[in-house]
Image: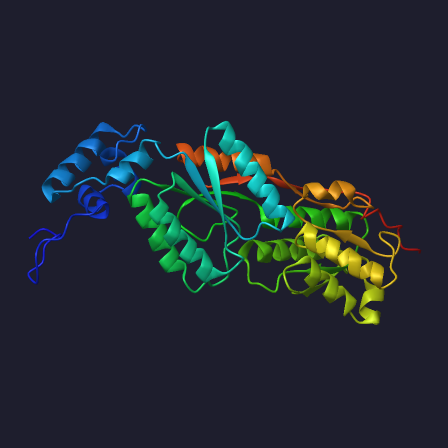
Length: 350
């Protein structure tokens, strides 16, 4: 008996997943053969898919054919928040690259809510854009990751493409940058400038890439010099959260610090506001560093030490994969940029 039949009822229509399993190929490969994609598939795979479709009586989805042939010119970008300087810069970079490729971009905002992300993907699947790009970190232990994966796989079955940015927790094509190593390299360089006592501001929201930045910085800082110490706090993941954490620090703890590292530039700027409200000068009394190298840093005094992420490269790679390129996870380098907010410390006396 065919797997599309059952003794309990009438035969159900064969799905693309049925055809892919029957042919022994991936869902995207079956979609390219049956939905009219311009991308080439090996003749042996093509024949297996066509034979399986004929045996199972599969009927192609017309909307899927449009997406696979590139008729849809819309790319859906799902991001955590548009007010965050990093994500607004990411959205702008994606839109520039998409326009150059003749595509339009629609933007959906999750507000860092797992359930909202799932609901948005369900809605977008019905709108049938050419690709869905999920930009933003995944969560530590997300409650609905299996449901999200299932929704995205169903979307791919109908000819769509899924691309992830800075996210490695889902089984789809990914463009990312090395959060752990970027933070680790920064810590090593700051240790080399003489810093030994650092406050690390992580995220109260359990975000994977932010956890990687914390772990990378702590590893690089404590392993690169004897006597190096880090204290890690997890405030609300925002400018206000970093400022409020600094405002609430014990005086004795604050006096011991030489450096504050925040996992985003936005939080670093919040920390600077809190430090100045406590009467401290940057960098004379305490140094500050961040991560992302957002464009608004050009107006910050003193210029902020950070980790540079090449967003244009990330966006270009993501759009290329949304259109046609298959490949393994691409990791875009992230590297430290030392500026005036973290000057070298004088060598200890004696």
